[in-house]
Amino acid sequence: MKAAIFIGRRLSLRSESGKASSPGVITGVTGVALAIIIMLLSIAVVKGFKHEITMKIAGFNAGITIYAPENADNTTDYPGIKMTDSLSSIIESVAPEASPTLIFTEPAIFKTNTDFQGIVLKGLPPGNPWNFVNDNIIDGIAPQSDDADKNSVVISSVTAHMLGIECGDKIITHFLDDNSVRTRNLTVTGIYDSHFHDFDEIYAFTPISLLQKLNKTDSLIGTAIELNGMNLYDTPAISVELHNRLINATTENPSNPMIFHTESVIESNALYFNWLDLLDTNVVVIIILMACVAGFTLISSLFIIILERVNTIGLLKSLGAPNAMIRRIFIYMAERLVIKGMIIGNAIALALISTQRIWHILPLDPDAYYLNYVPMELDWISITAVNGAVLLISALILILPSHMISKLSPAESLRFE
Image 1: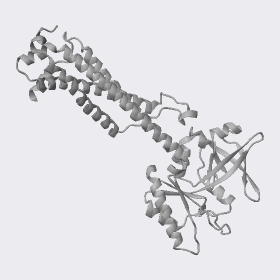
Image 2 (image 1 turned 90 degrees about the vertical axis):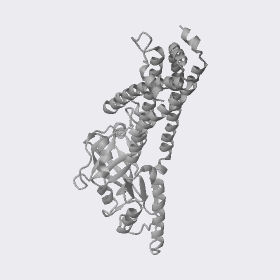
Image 3 (image 1 turned 90 degrees about the horizontal axis):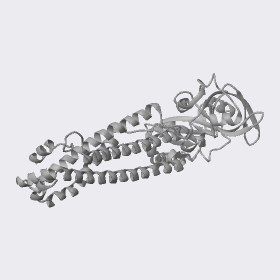
Image 4 (image 1 turned 180 degrees about the vertical axis):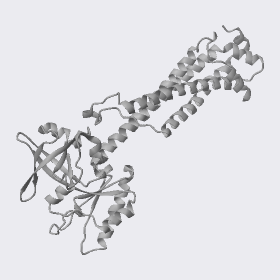
């Protein structure tokens, strides 16, 4: 084994003239580099796309939402859901990492002199719940406090365009209930654009105090409690466990039975998450195709290298070198070729990914893809897995063409030109 490695190191991957790499080496290095580049770019695009879309979905819908009890008595002073100490303790026991947020949603109609639009007005408490809105604001600012900006609203660019509204304008807002129509003049303090038109057309955001005052409830009452801070793909199981715990707590208090409904973001947006899961299939297909291309390229490259070194093979055989050792010499030479291609491919792929992440050079149509640029995300686990798989598969693939060496005659090899 040591002799094979020593001779393999001594044999150059350059052409016989020594001035340039041989055609086999150029072909092999290029094939491996292109395979690495395409594999890493494919994984980076899919991971980035899934991450960005998931974050947008989670911005509009929390990981888990606890809705007001369906059988709550509407004659009580809080027909919605109340953030009580007992409810908070149950949430903390099931999902200690979760951050509960009381929200208030209310259907409404925005009205101008020439047009109108139905929306869902989502009331948020001050602080972190506004982070998603702040990250997507393109004009103006979000309300800074419930008291100072209680009649403020942040609308989407889609709504602003449809109604001809600009930041700073006042908008007539109608709230409908079973008995009457209530009207408020709200000031548009900000306009956001998440590029997720399915949600942008529906949601507008306002301080929760506005909707609580409108519905004559106190600061502990809303229409739902949102739980964030969990792994989104763990939320279905946590949602079921939370639902069961709430049922058990209700049965222990038969004088006020309430059936809470919990729903995870995976369940409420199953269409989008199923679509994102299909992207993994595309990546697997691309990786398989690239592995096949790299494999065929390596096989042809090793054949070329062997043909270029026929005289060397004949000399080694005439000196008594066994076929197994000669095969190991050329496999080692080919692996050097593979490693060179991997280094070049990784360098180019990581440079392209970093460039796109910083400057967003490649654009996308947000109407079709919900994003205005190609997102890219990559971790060291994926990079290591791709490179390890390429190195292992290439070593296995090179065993087959190396058997050609055993069929070469020493006498004919030395006369070969």
